[in-house]
Length: 139
Image 1: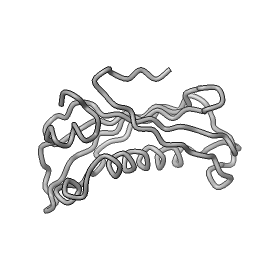
Image 2: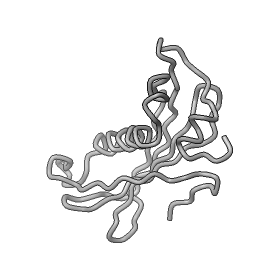
Image 3: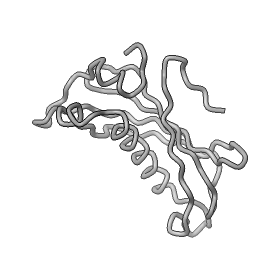
């Protein structure tokens, strides 16, 4: 079960495991999970922020932490759920949980520290406008 703080909104993306995601151990490769963690974060930002907000800033990764709990196999239908923590200056942590839809089993948990940059590439404080767009009710 995914435990999400009550003041957060969860963004979800469906994923179908394809043969190209499988490694020599016949399950999804760890690097593929990392790609999905980034993909769901970008999808959330793309869905939540309007073009004006996107033109003012961009995100870069400072750190990824992933825990692998169980394997995913070819043709599994997965769901990636993501939500954000309260920002710390220009930094904001994002959580991602990937689980198998058929049995609800959590396969991977991730916490990524992102840094917000202004159009010149310098760090920029994460504002309430941004956290509200991303679903944090009390940023």
